[in-house]
Image 1 (cartoon, rainbow, N blue to C red):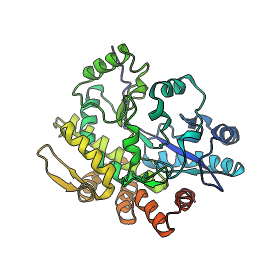
Image 2 (image 1 turned 45 degrees about the vertical axis):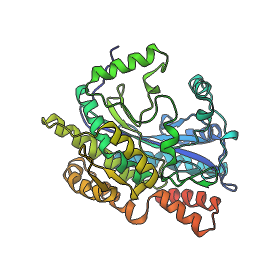
Image 3 (image 1 turned 90 degrees about the vertical axis):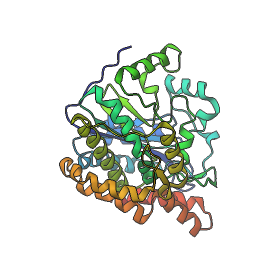
Image 4 (image 1 turned 180 degrees about the horizontal axis):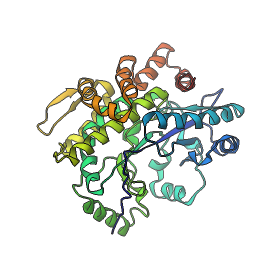
Length: 376
């Protein structure tokens, strides 16, 4: 089976931001994406930048093909400037967490479409549980044969990205004790979770052939890895991050992803052999960052050395500074360091819950207000 990778001559960017719809009074989820689309799309210069998702309680805002972080963030901001007033007319707010703290999966409605019906028919209870939202960042790569080595090396920074974005501590009214419950929920789906660390593109093609032959997937995009190639777009897609409630956090995560992928690809193209972690270390780092977030002690090399993730992040940002200069995202990369200082979303949500005696409506309120405040 041949999979053509439509290489990107430049390290272009694309952003996909999943957002839940919550009622303005009850703060519960609302299955009203269809009504929101009807009101919002006529206001949009490009209606294709607003997508439906698996459930009718979700919308996805996508950027076009962008060259800088600022361009990508401006693009999604412009779309939200049309979506938010449409929501206002329906008494709906946009919610940017990785999970909703108290909504019940039993009353959520499936979006129309054969693909969605087949997913639920196959995955049953786990599929119906997927009240989760994330951010996906695409970075263009110029050479097919460098895609899999860059993917494997990017997994070294999985815990950094997950800890920074973690925003799903509370599930079904209970604090799970995890910073990112979403990360562990999503991996229950077939083909979701950590990718295999293939060394070559033909190995990936052989894997995809086997998946199709045995009926695991019908299309390549049904490989739902946390990091995956998007061959039709010529990108590497980072799907690690939880949903984001603050647009400055979004800019930080997009900049970090852009810099990491470009840095790894540049070094590989120059002849450097990229360091990778054994799969068992990658798996453990995912669990640690999901559990402990910014307090995670992560494994940083194949020799099993460990560091506090925020200490390693500080050194990483210093190393990536010249890359950010080259990509024009110095200001956005600097925002990464602000997240540990003011607390990641999971920490901010817990602080509200504690201050209000466990009022989860107040938690949803806080997440909604962050989004609106960030958009000005």
